[in-house]
Image (cartoon, rainbow, N blue to C red; front, side, top):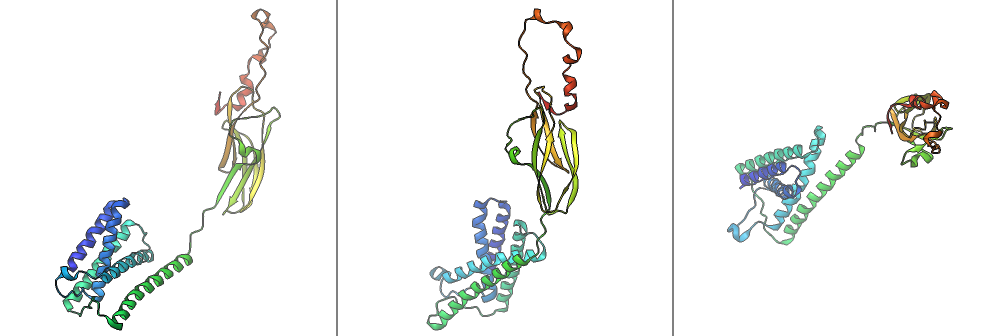
Length: 303
């Protein structure tokens, strides 16, 4: 009978491992495996159930099923604590292997107990005060054990050292610029863009605040970012050519950056004139080359 319980536990653990995250398949077999482990605990500690008379007439006492369920549920956190103490990750595969090792040890203990012919305890109702006392002890001891193990585990987890969180340096648009959700028109006098620089978990850093337009560095200056602070800075974006193109504006502090798209002011269209009124000789050659004005901002642009 003990061999059947051991094989049932092995089979259920194998199905749980093969389920690979499918809870609808793993859950029932996990419950059966824990119940089998609890039964092995009872067989190793108190021996197999004593069932006078035919098995179908007597059946397995409800109390033994309850004790087996409690013992099986208590085994899972014990295996997890053992894995944590050994430095192994508490995952599906290590838990399943730990459960298999527990089943092997309990099965061997139950087998040797049966070979040594140690007296087994009667699970029947003996009645009287002694029967009630044994029931109270059987219920109280597992409950106290579970609470003690759970309390120690929680306190050990809270007191265990934790790795320090990694530090970071971030830059983001601030003030009115935080509401930018479309390309911005830069006036002829330029545009002041506020930014917010946040430092956490790193030492005071001296780096550079850079402005790039179309991938080209337009302006840069050194800045000092204090440790664990939030600083407000401003960057002046110069006037962009009135060519109707979108220019990528990037503001970076060190290797961290933020940005938006911008365009120059829309130039007023000249009034339509007839071709006969146009005097080509009067047009200066410099006015016919708008690309020379926008040459400094060529890069990542969209027209």
